[in-house]
Length: 68
Image (cartoon, rainbow, N blue to C red):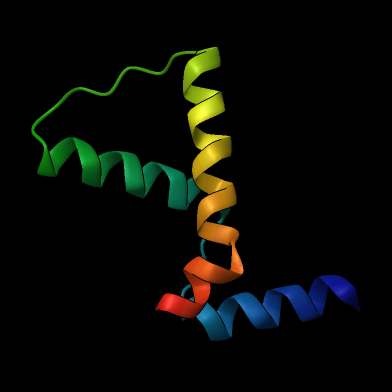
């Protein structure tokens, strides 16, 4: 039942029936095309991870959400 609910929700939100892998690939292709760049998969560096965590806290904060 839960899987059916998730599937129904995904269909309503996206209007598309795509897997997360298909979405990831579409994003990679889009970035590559728009920025005319070859993307290279690599491990996330520690400073990148820390910056992402910092930004995630900022954008999840009530102050940030309420300002929009």
